[in-house]
Every structure is written in structure tokens, then in C-alpha cells.
Image (cartoon, rainbow, N blue to C red):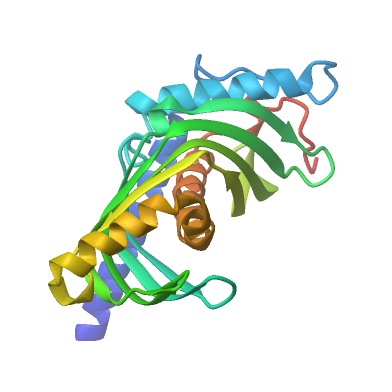
Length: 262
């Protein structure tokens, strides 16, 4: 009897999820006005694609009707980020939790290139300032300083030039072509970094203050040491955004002459 009830509940849940998915895709059977459609065959395809992606970012600042589950890109929240880094000037076993990221509302899309061969993207983004706040646990060292502690932290990289490479494939559903976004890889440069980590050295205030001062004074090598953490944060943000968007927004709304199986 119990197994039968469990099976019935499972069937009902699956039906509800399917119904919700169908309802969510119905909202975009007509292309939203904020999307600019481009064609590979156009001479100005890169410029058109860049403008189209900028329009998407601009709309994500306030949120998109029908994509309420995506939320807005400023602020963005991530439950947890885990970093293991053992090479170069940093050897760290670290995690960030309850992460809040702000600053993406000022995103400037400099260039967006879509491959007509494998449909991957390379997007160049400029971000004046980003702030990452959260709770950290860290064991290891940055430069010559051992950093073992847990508490609140924040990082503020400024004047970021980001290159994002996105891996994707195409699939068809409900007479539309969709992107299956599988991975993102981020590289970036910055012109400044400010940071603070609380409760270092089990709350010894003098050591905590002097260490944070040293890290800020030597922000260039510190930024290189922290690059895996910041890059992974950006990757997680952008991957989550794109996966949530492109499961509902058809890809041909962005590139009209994508191939179809038929």
C-alpha cells in the first residue's frame, strides 16, 4: 500500500513539473521585443550579436517576465563555492557560502562572437566594479601569509575586463531550436582589488588588521592568487543565468539561421 501511494505521489509530482515546464515555454512562443535577432549570413553579425546580448543583460537588471525564477543579475546569490588551489603563490582549501554578488547591473558587452561551427560563444564584458560578499572557511596561504580562519569576507575587484567562453549545443523542442549550455570558462584582468577577511587567526585583531592591510597594499600579486576564487564565482553566476534563460528562450530568437534537423 505504501509503495502504491509513493508511486502515485511521484506520478503527480512529475505531471505538475511537466505542466509547469509547458506553461513556462508557452510564454516565449512569440519573440520578446527586447531581443534583437541576428543572422550568421549578415555582414555585421558580430555587431548585431553584441547588441543583442547587451539588450539581454540590460533586461536582466530589472528581471524578465516569464523568467521570474532567474531573478535579477544585481544582486545575485550563490549558496556555496568550493576552491582547491595548490600551485604558485597560493595554496588554499577554501569555501565561500551565502555569497552575494553585486555590480553586474553595469555590465558593458564589448563583443560577442558566436561560432557557426559548434555554436559556442566568446563574450567580452567590461565591469566597472564587482563586490563579492559571503562567509568563508580557509586553510592555506596567500603569498607568504598563512590564512587559517572563518568568518565574513568581501572582495571588490574594479575595472574588470572579462572574456567568457561558453560551450553549448543545439536541440529542438516544441518547434523551436534551443541552446543546451553546458559550461563556461572565464578569464579576466583587473586594475584594482580591495578586500577584507574577518576573524583571521582566531580573532586576534592586531594580526587580522595587519594581514588585511598587507593584502590590500599588495593587491596585484594577491589578485593573481585569488583569481581562481573570483573566476569560479563569475563562472557559476553566468552559467546559472544562461542555463535558466536558454531552457526557455529559443535560440533562434537570437540567431535566426541556426540549423534544424529537419
